[in-house]
Image (cartoon, rainbow, N blue to C red; front, side, top):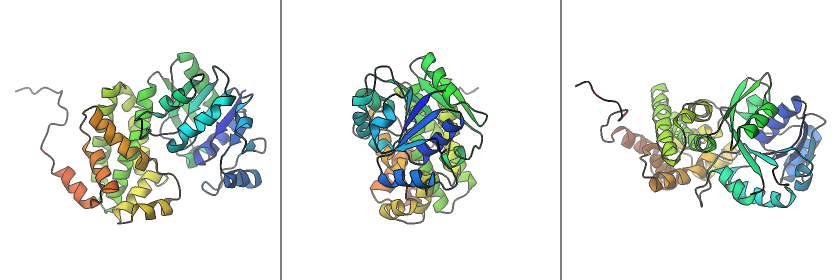
Length: 336
């Protein structure tokens, strides 16, 4: 069994504290927010995910050093916009070779780095791994069967992290494709916004299926151009995570999209959802990456125009439908 420090006590960090605690590990859970420290200390649960309680043995702290010192592994579970700031603060307490597992999802807008690259820049002494997949915190915390994939630079680290998380209700696969895992995790949030917008407009299953299918095509095109592997985008952190994020009401990105489709402003959406909507942060970065690598991403482009340029959602859908005619898979040959 291991001593594990979880950095970030939002819904995902808290759910993982429950999972890892049930696996027999000793857990220290850190939050920068006094309200989270107070709620978890007094009630052993967060208002955002009621009924999911951390064990009495889990240590809750607002002191970052307490969650890092003497820990075998660190799990970084903060929103993407706070990843660099948090990693920078962690640096003074980290020992060389310490394993840091990033479970956040996003792309840093300023640098266009995936989060492991941000962490490695701030924590060059760390052995960084990533974990992603179709895994709503609400379900993981309740012990509903879930599968994820862990990526790392070395097979040894990936398998070590795999063994920490594996349980009868949480199956973990390994992969060497860290970049592909993280790109799938971040970009699916943008497509989920589009799926939610379609729901908000009152469209049906046909529309959602089209957005999911063409969305993974966009993600894979960009991801492969950047060095990710096709197998990753057809796996858990690609199409798997995309399906669950586009289809479930647990998805804050889909919920935000629904409200946008219904005519809510961005400020009203954020106030209603009450949680970080990563797709909004990743949308601009996704479009910037598409332009940098000269990859066509029409859904991502239309989402940006709706979010930041005031385009009407219905108009965006019409433009997607009336784009120039094209073949579905350009590398497939005709018989005649």
